[in-house]
Amino acid sequence: MNNSSRTVCPPTGERPGVGLREIPLPPYVTAEDAQFAVRAVVVHAPRNWSGGTVCRNDASPHPCRLHRWGTRVLTLRGLHAADIAALIERGDPAAPLPPTA
Image (cartoon, rainbow, N blue to C red; front, side, top):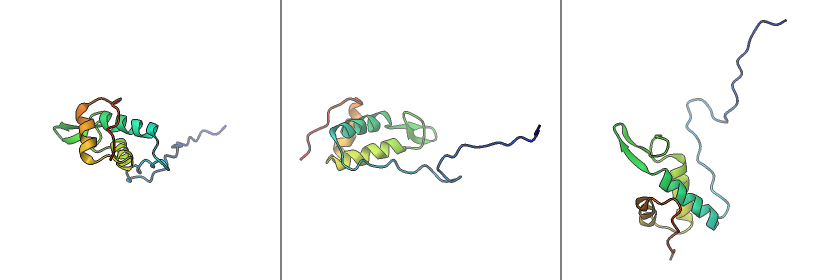
């Protein structure tokens, strides 16, 4: 019987000390992707905290990965920064997208 024990850590795909990579963008942005992006930017909105601005959902430094992803998707969909800020201010994760020009 072998009494030696070995700790095996599951691979995470990230090197130690390196932050998480960006979430990949979809090859083309569908209406469903845009609605997920609205949810991401609203749920992961900034919140002022004693240590600085953090993600309202998970308290990670803002902007978190999902907020950045949602912003990039909505920008690809044709929304401007003011449109995205208005969605966040509204606070409704199921809000319809504003029309794009």
